[in-house]
Length: 257
Image 1 (cartoon, rainbow, N blue to C red):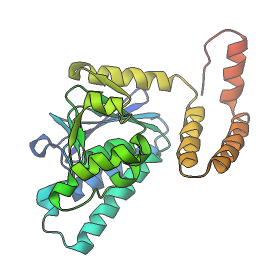
Image 2: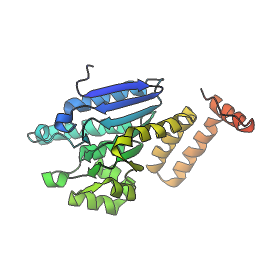
Image 3: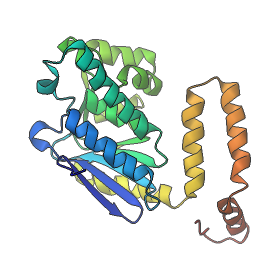
Image 4: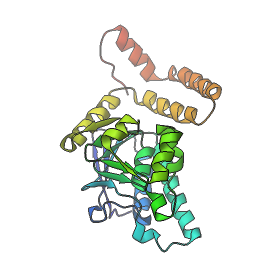
């Protein structure tokens, strides 16, 4: 697929995906969703990539879904648009790699939902978050009603969705929506520092940890604990476990495969 709205760059195991439609503040439409799905499908099967950094070009991460695209949709078309976005965001959430959102500016509506599908969110001091859909006569359609309560709690999520208000990066950090806030000029540097730290660990262990945590949060604790025990045991069948523990005993840095 020829990419008209995305920039993709790979460097030393990290793939940076930049949504590059600054004239529309990177607003999501059907074309951008298709490009993102294509790219993330490729990344999922790329053994050279262990970390994905997702960001936006210009002053927005993603300012929302494209209202000019949505305004004339009928109910059937809107349902499909929502399903397409939700399917893509679920792919990102369950990707076999770690996905970090570097939120450089506006992350509103679909942009906030996209960031929540990522494993972590690093925010610039210029970032703004919100779910303003009720002011347009709709509700969040890309799984925002499901992920926001899981991240910040039901009460705060209802406040943000019912009021349609925006919050700044510091407030997003306070309520647990983002992991870290940094100056805009340092955003990518700080994001890559975290990516490099993750990348220095066992890739298979990080992948397993993500899978166990994602599954566990969606089930009862007894089932989650049982799944953790199974995967914990499976780790001991890996070369990385042998190397990691041997390196610890020998007081050297591990060389994971």
